[in-house]
Length: 298
Length: 143
Image 1 (cartoon, each protein chain N blue to C red):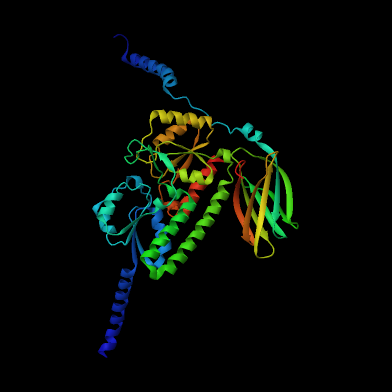
Image 2 (cartoon, chains in turn orange, brown; image 1 turned 180 degrees about the horizontal axis):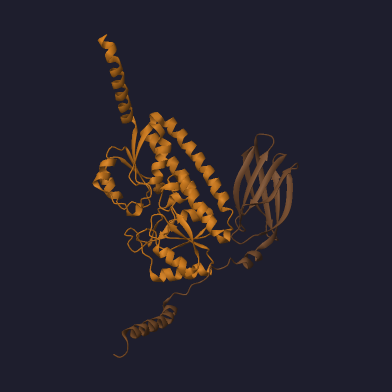
């Protein structure tokens, strides 16, 4: 009689204990990129827990690593970073954590950029452009890099990781087909992109655009008066129809250039990763950017 | 100072208003109108372009779109179909979106050859299981 009364409580206790034990069994991943957070969630599925340190809409160029961030990544088996020197705090992170650090972008082909004055790593005057996620095929390649890491760390769930990665890659291929079809609405000689900072080189190379950027590679760079004046001349000469703003940046200089050059404001783009609203997923971000660009330049 | 203070104030206001016009003219930045799209340049790129489709199987239905609009659609009963169109073909090249469906299932290939004016032909082949859907870039000097 007494045992039958205790049975429901025992079942409840066991269920909670099992759930807790299963959560602890999951592979812990930390991510310093909104794009990689989504990839890790898609590839890892039910077998992983992902802690995203960069929030939706946050500018990764200006992110400062804090002690609470180190606490948050302390339990992770792998820490995903964008790589290509985007994370200026990378060495501190490497020294402070025992987890594997995977700078995913370092495994992808690089485009070189002229370095800003504050770029300490640029001995040759050029640095790697870190904005690899603005090309859909690059994100597909990043998916397979994350998959291989998860398979290595947790071979017991290798089949799930491989199947999840393939499913997400298929979605990305469909997305890339949509992008190419949408951009094909725009004549190739009208594909001229004026953006706030130099974040769309990979996009431009993939889809046939020429880039005119207002600021440098980092959102912290300030444009010189000479550069702004040259850019206004270029916009007039090239008959560029629109100048685009970025969700994480102050639009003051862009708006002024738009006014002076006679071009229109084409809309706001997500340049540095996922944002809020319709840019909260990679597919949403890409569709927003491509639709905004094509509709403004047509 | 002589005269009514009200008259003096009125005189000051009139002087400021008169001064405002030349000051505004001198200090405001010149504003350009939105430049018109160079339609002459676009028109000078218009060429007579021959399109040729070669399929590994028939029949098949197809649609080729240019700048988001249908350029050539149809159902082919023969393995080879050709059509001549007039489109802008700038040095940067053109993107064509191709959708095709074969009646019989299985892996099939569709080759599109584009010959712009007197230039050498440009060609790409798409493979698909029952259907193909892709956007291809054709540019002189790349094929």
